[in-house]
Image (cartoon, rainbow, N blue to C red):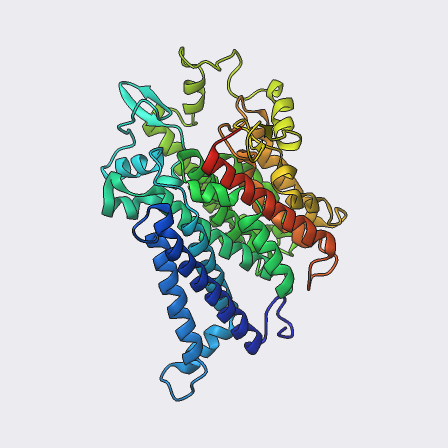
Length: 461
């Protein structure tokens, strides 16, 4: 460890780590190339190939960094010794792994269609009947916030409506895994602890399934994750108010629920020593986000608020429609049941236990989330992370539908970053995970992986 820099490694340790991770990425890409013909694919996924190229280039850079006579070797050496190289290596491994396990291109590409509309200067879309949309003044509008479509605009500008939304979701997923690693580094975890918790986030939660599926609702949820992780990274690093506000604001434009975490972010900044004057600097950023929100809804519905879900819910042909609107306390018990108790289904055929379409409890997909209860809630940051989790999940716990069809409890995806930070803060030893953590992370990876592949290969129970 480098003195005075929490979570950082010395040059030789960083070099070994980066090389090991890049070799893992190359091995995974090679394995995928060998398996591709068995899956009736002529070639590996382009994402896997891209990841392999990045890994080879990174590995070559680590070799050049050790050759003083090579021009630029000192710059490469500094990069390899920094946390950026390890973050890049984590991204590369996640990119190859997610690319190799991605679902086929999804037909549920509502964000692609919204991005296509934005590029043509309007908000209304050409929505097929199977896509959730509302009709206002004869034009169809989708229900999602704008950020997921904005993120897709560069790809849609090139490939149009043929853009592979699942592929973009995979890339966002890999970026999120790298940012999770970076956040855990900022918290001050040692190498072993970071590797275990990063593996948990990437492979031991339903984030793996969602990021490699890329359907409309899944993509929208996954699009919020990197920005929340970036905001938390800044909280645990320099705690600069403006970057935190920017990332928190962008996350809220991906999932409106995340606006409810803004007060918790401000209190976290205060807990990290920021003054009221510092916090006031976030006001223009949050105001800009609010302007985007209002403008988007004015264009779509002629109102300052998003009434799309209410219009969809109240549609005469919508079979779940009930008086009172889409959010009500009457739905709280079932949503809590989904998150805490819903079990998989039993069948008469192998593998006999399958995830059911209605969902599955968090601890039955990712039991390591129980570790989020372990930090001391007498300290401000754990309290505020828990507050952000509870506030953000308020709408998801009172909405009329629990997220089905889904593997796990899909709406909870947006608070995984907060819960991961809580797990990290609760580790008894910041250098390496204790036995309970390792057991629960290993069980989470087993549950998440087996459930994901059961759903992909056999369907829901």
